[in-house]
Length: 354
Image 1 (cartoon, rainbow, N blue to C red):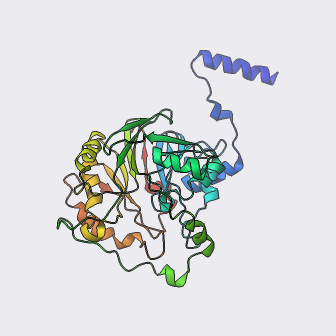
Image 2: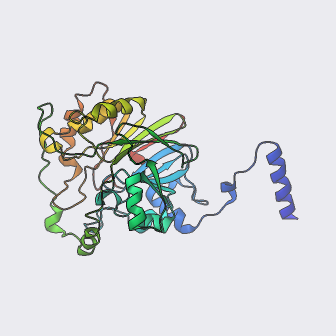
Image 3: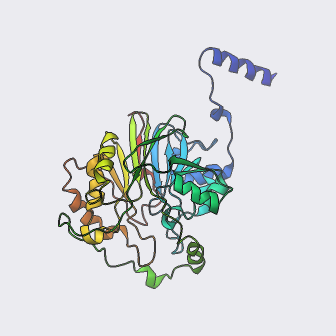
């Protein structure tokens, strides 16, 4: 009798245009609810279904350029490497990131500090990897049991925009651009050498097992650098995990023109560390921000992710803010600092349609 009443009520609500969404009556695995609550915050997760709030965009940082993203109810990753070379530096693990069940992993480029965990997380979660044709070619060889979509086709020129239709309800555009590289000084921005390196190297030696694991990824190909723009509910969000020398490369003008076509940008989550900062400071990062003119800018790839190579985020904070003063339309900056801002989802969030 009760089942019959439920069926009748469902039919009546459907006829009235008030059908109850399936998610409202579904029950999620407790592991999913717990993992998503830890990564996105309990207040952003339905504690019965595990669904994410559909009215917000949330970026939860887990190191370098890796973010767990909730967008209009979708859950996906940007890059996939959890940098726990130092024990517990990031308060999460590959297993927990896989447990949030991302549908996609968007790869900016293929170096180990961006994609070393991509295959393992995709395998455990069922996520599709998204990147360039070269990225997918690599994964077809290295991890043939995972799926990869080439959002940027082979031979695509830097500055071209490519529509990816794998996220229903979200418009995704992929833009091939430039990986960071060192160029001769121009004098426009002072050289930057963030020092001193982290003291963790002395008080907490790197984990040998993690270093051995990463050794197998040191030769992973870059595969080109891809910037992604996500449009949903009247919001445009841009993410990139590298910054190339737009002002010093022949492809720069085409890339700048493409970045300007993405305006207006509500949120730009962009890399600020690059090889060129040693000679030209943070000019490359500022060039991307100047072209996109975002309302809010959030830095990435600026934290203490590897011994000797990387330094804490605070080591370049002042230099970044000084360099940003040269931008005509300077954004609101939500500067992330490690390790205190790892897995703090409320640091990078904004409403959809508001």
